[in-house]
Length: 252
Ligand code: OAD
Image (cartoon, rainbow, N blue to C red; front, side, top):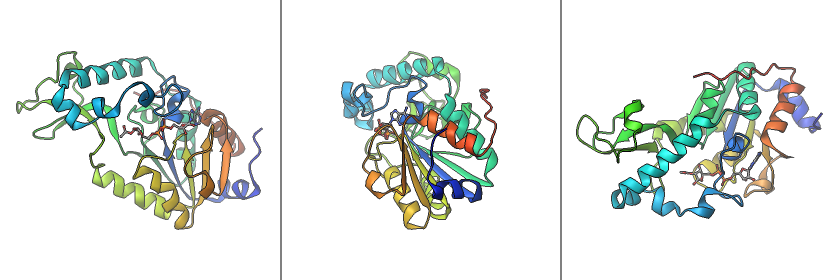
């Protein structure tokens, strides 16, 4: 059994409004690479060559192929106990907002419903001309950037470097951070803004801030409590403390 502080043991059953920010670390136990660890994606590739609009204009095939490759990896991946534990927490709390920087869609597949995807979702494409979003399977072909009905090129519906986050999603995330009593920052290096500011906003507005990570991060010195270890193990510990049932059945 994992030891939690007295504060957390009191707040866990008492809290009514809970918010969570997840990063690539929550999906590491599903076999997906993080961005900045030793084997991180940005250790092997340069983001400005793969994840920017300029890169897409310069070499659409390269960018398309990279996203197709990641989509293939994702087809083999499954949600892990950390994802399922978060879905169990959502069923328990009257208000629960799951804010994620991940584009992998694994929270939805684990049964989470109130999910704010700050950086989009790799499953979808959108037209660079009319902006229409689609998840039509035929557009996930290896042909370079297939055309939208309007004739525009399709690109993955994810936020690239230098782009704004979807405004409504970001506003909803700030609102959740400002109004929650308990906030968990899980598996994120807390480097990329504006996502990284959400835990601190929550704390400034009175929430008890808990970080779950394998190691220290940019915000470790500013949190109320650090739980060091793998997200899956610690989240299962939280769920067990609350006596909740985890349903490990994937939803489509
Ligand atoms: P990072 O790769 O920057 O950080 C992953 C964090 O997860 C690190 O702090 C690890 O220590 C931690 N970690 C790894 N495995 C873990 C585990 N099993 N349990 C708990 N923690 C673990 O990923 P993010 O913070 O998500 O943006 O990166 C933020 C953004 O940078 C991404 O959304 C992406 C990237 O560029 C865009 O693509 C716009």
